Amino acid sequence: MRELTYVARRTVEWREVPDPVVQSDRAAIVAPIAAAPCDVDSSILAGHGPIPPPFPIGHECVARVFDVGDAVSHVAPGDLVVVPWAVSCGACERCSRGLTTHCTSVPHMAMFGAPIGGEWGGLFSDLVAIPWADAMLVPLPAGLDPIAMASASDNWPLAWRLVAPHLEARPDARVLVIARGSIGLYVCDIARALGASDVLYVDPDPEHRAIAETYGARTAEAIEPIHHGFDLAVESTGRVDQLAVALRSLVPEGFCESAGNHFRPGELPLLEMYLTGVTMRIARDNVRAHLPEALELARSGRVDPGRVVSNVFDWEQLPDALPERHLKPVFVRDQDR
Ligand SMILES: [Zn+2]
Ligand SMILES: [Zn+2]
Image (cartoon, rainbow, N blue to C red; front, side, top):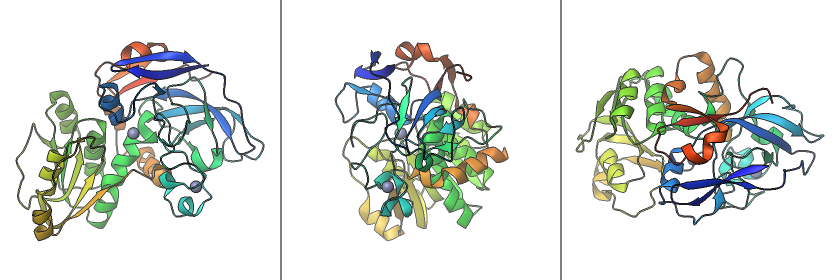
């Protein structure tokens, strides 16, 4: 089978590798049918990632189950499933507390699409081995479009986690979103659906701002800090100076959620944060733990993540089209294979 491999700045290529086999009675093999780049993949493709190539890339997809081990009971061949970006066993002490990206059955940072915690392959591959199928795979709810939900492995449920718990506690919160890619747009959609009284979306890209406006957000190219302006600030730029703007725009005792991936160092306004009394969270997302609840919001029809999909390409176009600059391209294959 072929594995799409990141080989150099703005260059990916198919590499032939042996087909994966079901290696235990709890494992499965899946075939991605709709896969998308994570926002951080654009940084990697631009040569800004922390890991030198080559490595198989891709960690967002909806897949069709191809084969399963004898002990797998939650999914069966032919099912459409979401494949979470992180590898987790579902049974260790951390997994049982919902800390699935910190699973102790695998090396720390075990994930698809980057060889940080072992080699698990990428989701832009013809076939992918899933070591714990029942623990990891989440069936795609009936009626949801795999193309619209290709990001359900990572960016979309991350966006849910960045805002949904806060809006549950305070449904009329004012929300600031400083972003560069799909995560911030998903945040606008989910924040409005869950009752945010005001959403300001900040991004220099006019195409992104136009989508945010369809979700009911106000928009700006850039802002200076808005003193005591927002109950919740979400930062998804990978830039520490923009994280500082988000932090400096909070009300007293406000909350800042950062999507992380700041590959370059920078300074945070710690004294101002102390005086305002802010809480900041910067954490890799335990997607598997809250994915069913997030998917329930998508199933309800109250959100429309499909608007963020910028292009639909055929699977065979991956080597040419993935390195191009698109907001959220989705690469699709025959869904009945
Ligand atoms: Zn990601
Ligand atoms: Zn575990």
